[in-house]
Image (cartoon, rainbow, N blue to C red; front, side, top):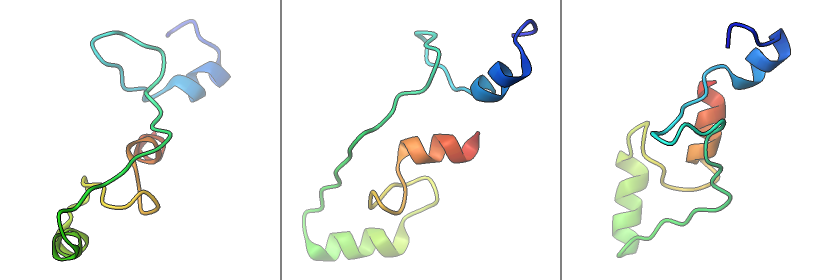
Amino acid sequence: MDDWKTATRLVHAGTRRSQYGEMSEAIFLTQGFVYDSAEQAEARFIEAGPDEFIYARYGNPTVRMFEDR
C-alpha cells in the first residue's frame, strides 16, 4: 500500500478483508428481515441496538461499511 497513489489509497483505505483477502467488501444488494409476529417486529424496532439491522431503509451492512470508511 505504501506505493499506491493518493486516489487509490482514498478508495481502498479502511477496507475490511476476510480470511480470503479480497480487494473490497461484499455488497448486499438486497436483504430481508423475518419476524414471527407484528409484536415481535414492534419490539425489535423499539429495542434494536446500533449494530442490528431491522429494516433495509434504516440501514444495512453495505451502507454501514461505507459510513465507517
